[in-house]
Length: 265
Image 1: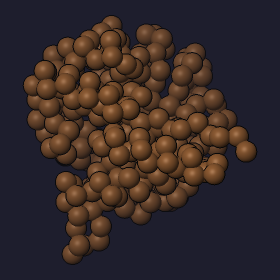
Image 2: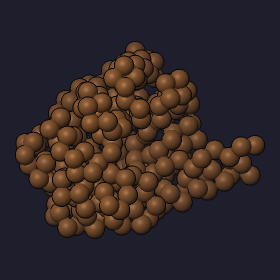
Image 3: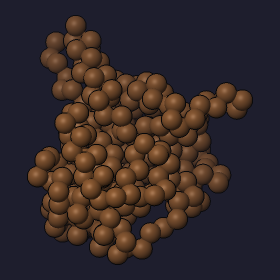
């Protein structure tokens, strides 16, 4: 049996004061650079640098502020390994690529023209609504079918623009209820098959998100969601995810390696 490649782990560096997980906040540039360097040392294949929170209810950040937050970090980290920029702004994306980023992680799904123009990889992530509105009343007839249709449209757009490296992300937690999120995870194999049709790769991010808090009356706080994060990362990887985006890099790298070894044992 041919061994499947070990899925990649994308580590998170948030250069913001308001990201939902305090353990990933690094308001000072030097601290962000140090965190990113550590994530590479722990096994991250890519470090994802963001200067604007996209958590539910987050306040938008001015472009100049976002650029000032992320560019020094990207410049420093790009000599250590592969760096992506987590942004929805064309100006920030262009500046990040000039600073050394080779992937645009786009939660808006609108920056394909920028990725094509700058000749870098693109992550198209599905979201229903904006960070300010997305969790007010998310609704789908069939969440897997509707997200798949949107991802297919983005894959066709990317191919039309000549983007050579494409990642598709179903957007766990972005305009979805707990049931929606679990449905997407349970059907990760369908999403992976869709990606394969277009030569794309599947990226999934569940790390410490709100849907892992459990049922009402037994809520698990964000600082205590490591177990749920690892469990859902493994579900995603077993379903065919090529990369998972996480706060807890070392534990996830270890889980990915063990899972891959077990699948061919």
